[in-house]
Length: 193
Image (cartoon, rainbow, N blue to C red; front, side):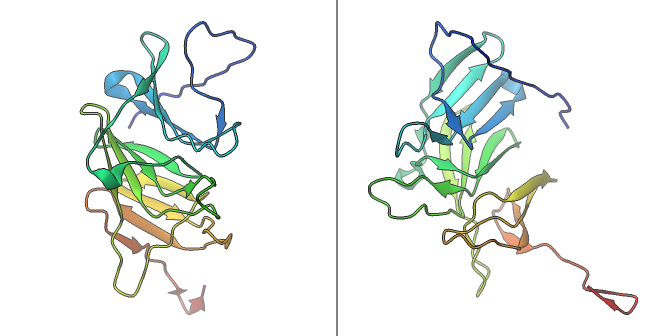
């Protein structure tokens, strides 16, 4: 496990080179093999701009650059999103769930139950949709808690498209994209939880 921590502090600095647009609710993910950071998503200060661009910061040259991904298929072309989580696993970046940004074509900010996978070596970008479990449907969500453990991404709660707060505790296998509720103990020594 990588236990290095990086802190960025930008204050009154005038850039002479290109830098990404200002944004909120984006993700910054470290790629140790390339000594770089990938910035994706968020909401910019410009109206109706869901930042779908991938921006890479090279920690060796100290410069930002745009990434032009190769799309695996037409459906893998992504729109900007916010309220998602991003993890580095198996030499790829996984951008998990989140919400599309409102624009002229959409009347609501639709939450997502898809996972974007970016391979920094091939620059290929693809989308996986965790499968449904029979009568159970994986509810799209944003602003959830989550963590990665042994190839399983655990997530709790979040908010759905209609603004309902979710209480589900699930895990998604990032190798197969199957998902299931995390088992919980409901009785112990005669006590109900």
